[in-house]
Length: 115
Length: 111
Image 1: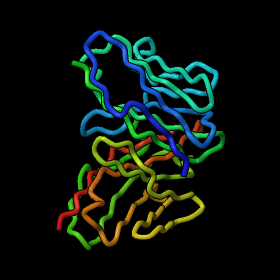
Image 2: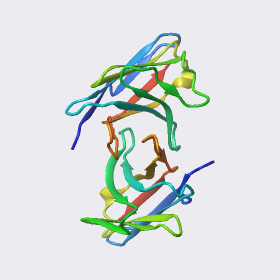
Image 3: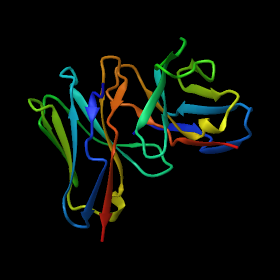
């Protein structure tokens, strides 16, 4: 099956710093990438949808200036958590889909801990 | 408005027996459904899917049943194994291909 690589798998950062998470589709062109966040014991929450070459569409309640998403190529999307705070600590997961696909493939996830 | 619902947050099943995970949806436009499995600290992995033109899809120990009139689907795992212990999400893509997830059901298979 298709492979989506997410990096890093875990990161610890100091409060106030920024963290970048990468999501790469390794064997297909991801025209659309989705970024999710999961809090402990809760479902995946869609944060934003990005289509290659255009601005991301953010879900209600998600701060676009805090969670910067870039999808500059068909194989790479990045999520940058700016000025991270402890409440941003969470598990972040990307998924990627090619045009017309009926399923999306998930990255391995990134555990972010802000201290 | 929760378009995809998993009303049982947890399920405990003995090894060797059948696990049945349920999912309900409200949007009659959904025509494709997926089940994902998630272990702690890992991303969800695709398990099995079903199109609305079918009412059953089977893959090894996993079978998904779809009842369109009831807007209900279920995932059957038989026989259940301890390695099946995980959180299971059902999901459906909306008309923009965005996956709408249920809240998940935590399955625990005990010896």
